[in-house]
Image (cartoon, rainbow, N blue to C red; front, side, top):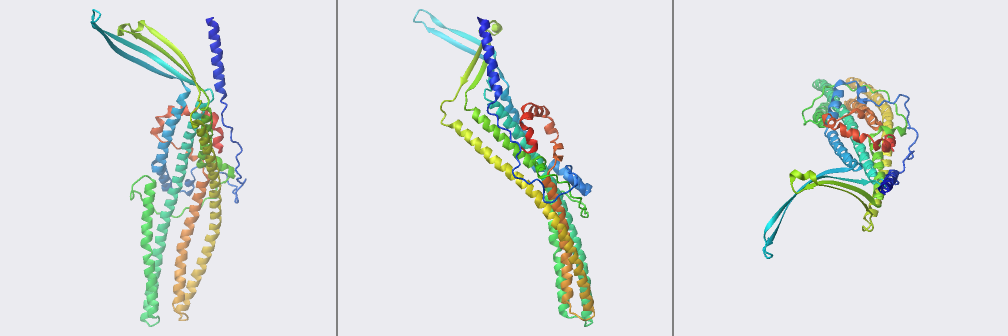
Length: 497
């Protein structure tokens, strides 16, 4: 008879585990989410897509070193690593419910009983009880609730890793932009100093002509004002250079004033990188990948909330050794096996409200994902348009500067011949000087647009980043998370969704 009971129990257990393996509330996969993104960009490059460290194409060793230091020490990047470690631990905790729990138990109890003597006896009795044992418990995942919570936690962890990548890409582009701005201020300062020398030379010439009655006092005053104006433009440039150095130091995780850089010419603009197609952004942009992973995590949260509305089956077992004397504790033993089935009947619509809440989170994250994809596409398009027209703008500016220089030469010649007064010379001189500064700014803007394009295209170079010894000490936990369900539930995420 006991054999049939055992057989029936085994069949029931197999049926329960088979039912739990079905996971009826698994979310449907989200495939082919084109979101209306065009198939190609307005501009196209035939160059192969480059996913490496793009700043190295500027061929400046100091710049490469600065970016490397920032990726290691920047506060935003380090904070992102810290958040990643938090979610790594949270993912390990959420996965722990898959396994049975085993606890050790021990207790000691001392009790006394006495008689007041009314029955002819008087005295007391003391009893000691010692217990030592093990207690195990396990919740059978009938409807996939534990699996869903585990998947949601693992996806949140992966999303946090993409946040690290996004922070690293932002920091790299900001360091390069600050470096370019510092070089721009130094170039402006050199131009202003050269213009100041030119203005002082013109002033000496006009003062000489004034002493020889060949120029008026107004000519002298006008040139003195122009010279003073040029001299006044230098201090703001020096101030802005220092501010940019302070910003660069902050990006490198250092106090203001702790960083200086060597003066360098603007790097040559590399060839336009390979753009691929807009759909590549789904895999190359860490913010897009993070948004997709968060959406999948919300899908699994809905599954967990739906499964939580159904009954739960728990198993518990206990083995206990007990004795009145510690030396004889192994002489008495007791075991027990318990199962419990608990199902919600009325909870004030709490579980139903949780399902509705998680579904609203899915809607929110779906919109966030779409917004992120469209923003990524817009940033690439904006950078391409800006760079295209900036090339033409710089060419037009240089043609304008060439015409202004010819105008200045002609006005100066006519002034020296006494055919014109000094005002045309002064106007042409100011125009030339303004154009020289504007062209320097335009060239820096062109490089900045290219940096923005690299940032907008994303890449995979951040996959090689690590947090040093702080993460290596937790390599075993990372292997636990990387194994199992994470491979089955996140495969589409690397392609966006």
